[in-house]
Image 1 (tube, rainbow, N blue to C red):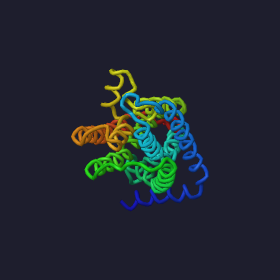
Image 2 (image 1 turned 30 degrees about the horizontal axis):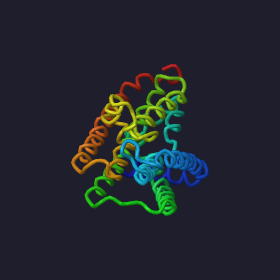
Image 3 (image 1 turned 45 degrees about the vertical axis):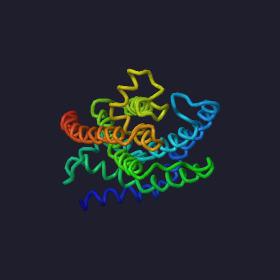
Image 4 (image 1 turned 90 degrees about the horizontal axis):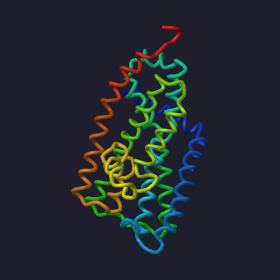
Length: 261
């Protein structure tokens, strides 16, 4: 554990050194939040749409912002660069597990993300006139769901970045991943607004746990029983993706070519 803790600490110190880049990334997500709040205020000003009221949508969008800000320290770019440059070969000889090391790095930037989320959400809630906090059981379920967002988002990004072993460029992979995540997670629009068949697929996909599950639990759109089922699906995908990523890693390293060998 000492080696992984050191890696997490190194990322945390790196964020302090390049904090402007991190802050700019958070500001970009914040601008998206402001734009979505303005759009949905107009759409829901007169009456609910698909059962969503304006106060519910305010809370939904704030949860969306929080989920989007988690695991956002661009560790995937570092990983992609090392794979495409061949420097990943140095990682292979280190006495640490590659996947656990990348997860430790993702956790290293978590502290700043949480601080910024608390500042933004608290400020936004004050400007919007406050938010209704769910009751005890629902609040606990929401907290568990938010905790699961961290490994789930890491694993989706990690699996996507492993594609660099087969591709020459990471940008196309990243754009495709962001597009799919934004649509199927409910970050762009709630899944209730998607066509029925697509909404069903999205709800059972790993992407729903990135935004839709914690947001729906927080605003009370699902009961406690249904919320437990959604969290169980979220946890199930974390387990499946964790071990699936390990199998994919074994196949990926066979594609590595360094100095012709």
